[in-house]
Image (cartoon, rainbow, N blue to C red; front, side, top):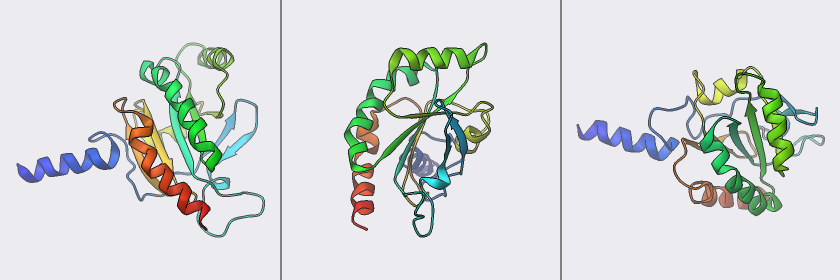
Length: 183
């Protein structure tokens, strides 16, 4: 019984919620190629990747937040995500919102939400949830958020709505930015 409880606690510490999601800290973040709302192609392997930095693709730490307009916890957390962006983006963290489309005219609902809210970070769309399933598993369960270092390694994951982003990720973000800038 003690062993089971210890495994449960370790799972909560590593992922933010027990038994959710296929990824754990130390894993390579699954690469994605997704179209941004403005039409640009966004590729993780041009933002955070192993090896020497490419002249055309500067490395940086990434904060991924998976979102859908019918996800109430996602909507409720948006001001906090904007605050996290304002606090850490001057240090080099890039916040990317990965939008999933809800049933029934999801693209139009997403576009209306974006027009109404003027979000300050990059927004990409995973139309068929192909890349989302690599991060969240199948079925996709929201909310979920991931911190990835400049080398493409998952540093921390949070599954579920409990807890504040900055409380949960802040010390790790600060450490990643300091290490990254120290290179």
